[in-house]
Amino acid sequence: MATHPRGLTSVPTAGATTAPAAVADAVDTVVTDLALQLDDTPPAVVVRDLVRTYGVPTKADGETPVLLGVDLTIRQGEFVAILGRSGSGKSTLLRALAGLDHDVTGSGTVTVPERVSVVFQDSRLLPWARVLDNVTLGLRKADALGRERLAEVGLAGRERAWPTELSGGEQQRVSLARSLVREPQLLLADEPFGALDALTRIRMHTLLRELCARHRPAVLLVTHDVDEAITLADRVVVLDAGRISLHLPVELEGTRSAADPRFAALRARLLDALGVPPEPPAERTES
Ligand SMILES: Nc1ncnc2c1ncn2[C@@H]1O[C@H](COP(=O)(O)OP(=O)(O)O)[C@@H](O)[C@H]1O
Ligand SMILES: [Mg+2]
Image 1 (cartoon, rainbow, N blue to C red):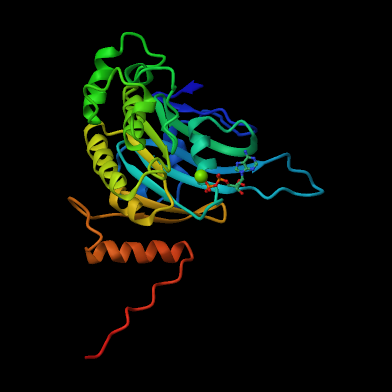
Image 2 (cartoon, protein in one colour):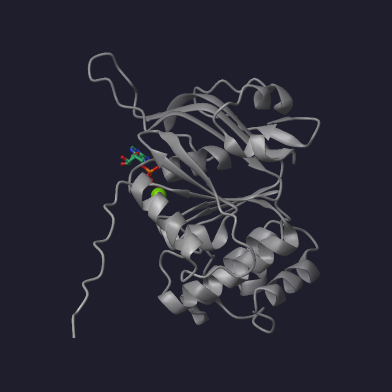
């Protein structure tokens, strides 16, 4: 991977043009990425004209690309949630940022920081390793930091437990601790709470917000849950027909409540962008 002056790295991806253009040059080409016009915090992620196709495209059957030219910038410390219908290419985009997309062809540029962590829906813990060893896997002399991160996710005292002794929510906490122990500049999360029950999910939202406020990684959260996106993100983007069709800043301060009319307005806007028809007004019962 090529390293840029600001510690950013071009991810080499199948068939992609990954010339290590300076990030500033890449930024200059942006016209659609609203965040860039809003503030001048340096970018952590710059994706330009990303095209991705599974299988080998031939003239005969002409595989349709999943991503048709994605442009996305994520600022340092910015939390971006990406929404899109199932199969719209959210995971494909996330894998491109993680450098895990070896089974695709395509073009475009992806620029990410050096330290990137990924969290999936499945915690992907090694069943034969204790909790602390899962957190510090691959790192040397990281036990103290691992314990610290476990305490941060509410699992102090569970260092020697086996993953199978933990609930699904606790396993995802370990997975978060494992990602944070690497002090990521970019945290990629692909539907990390998708398999959790509603109450655990709410607790995990609070935890993730606290952790991100403290460690300030740039975040790309893939979700299909509109409320989750509004609750957590600084900006929500919608992926549709292979491109980002909407950038929606979430300017709600403090703890976000679905009862806030501004929350409801954002939800309506996002559902519209996702092609979900508006709910019919509640029927009034005359007394
Ligand atoms: N490894 C793969 N091989 C072939 N097709 C794939 C592969 N992964 C995803 N796809 C296809 O690419 C499209 C986008 O998938 P994905 O990025 O997983 O969507 P999302 O995460 O938005 O649900 C889907 O039509 C899916 O079937
Ligand atoms: Mg997916």
